[in-house]
Length: 526
Image 1 (cartoon, rainbow, N blue to C red):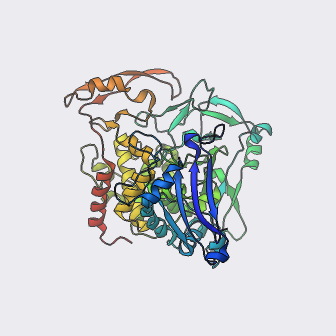
Image 2: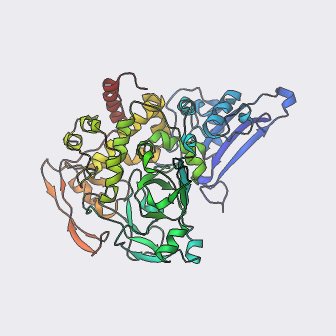
């Protein structure tokens, strides 16, 4: 097909070009030619993220000047504007790169490699850099176990799990649903007491939870302990000659939402879970044995970074599975301790993560620092760290967590060989929903989000109320009372404190600041 293909135009049905078809549905318009006419080597044009046919004409009519349009425009609408850079010229060289990235990297693997989605030519080099990383998770195939765990329908039928909305009292058979998982956040949301539809979850305030907190869940173990243990997937230990195995839920693991939007705020939403946690098959994940926890910590940081999210988006599949996860590159880099630490600080939110923290402890962590000067980012975040986890160890405020994610974007880019300009293009062109949220999210003097275009439930002000206090003088305190039902014993009334002044962040400027900081600290990054 590649030898015959001349034009490949990939559409998404968001503008309902086909009525009655789901708006997420992708389809393509393709033009072929007999290869005997123009030779047997592949050469064709590809345009992705199309929402209207007129964009194709605009791309070819473009003089290549002006700003390259992203997936969405400034109004949050699907972008139908064309630009010359949207036309990606694909030949054997690009297909070879695709085969290294997502297919069979053998000599003729390019002939049947899957296509990779590229929004603009400026993003091509970033994918080339990732394809050139010699190791991926596939390299560790004998040391990593993937599992979808419990099928949400079949495991209820066979009596493994049952519907049971409750707060767990121990880590035994804590069963996760996908809305619990955010980017490097295993405690994003909790199930509502009266769960009726798949949006019935409330955001969790990480600054208010106890050290042994577990979210309200939808399911519980339905069979005996012995039967449950026998049904859990086993992990072979490659270091044991006797073929010893352990239970998949007995180790720390990295998991992500399985069904994902390719054009939403984030696609790869991965976080670390502790022993005792299981999940339903709407979650994809993998585990490693304790001697490989350093790899798990590294990937927990890398998978929180935009370049890895961009990689998953480029594959173009809305269902993340073991095959997709195994393709992720694992760079050898002197930045690994910085990446591991931020991954751990974001994920290790409760005491069940204490063993992971201790097993990945490195004395160098205490000498690290934020890449940005701001009173909401204190030096003792790093200098006070020890090998023993406590409630103050992880990052809990919105501002700290955002800054750690920004720094991971930069660190991952450096480790992969992606330039600062390419990182900015990845953010601006393919993460337009995230950009829209960033441009309208406001933080208070203590690092708490006070208002955002993104919905944080009752944890933030609504727009009309925020507009009334937006320009409050420094030091003025606002203390709204909310009803919180995300913890046992609720619902309860609690007061949230917001301290003026309120300001926004500029992610691109923060990228530049962090890039300069890490370049000065590490010089020639490898």
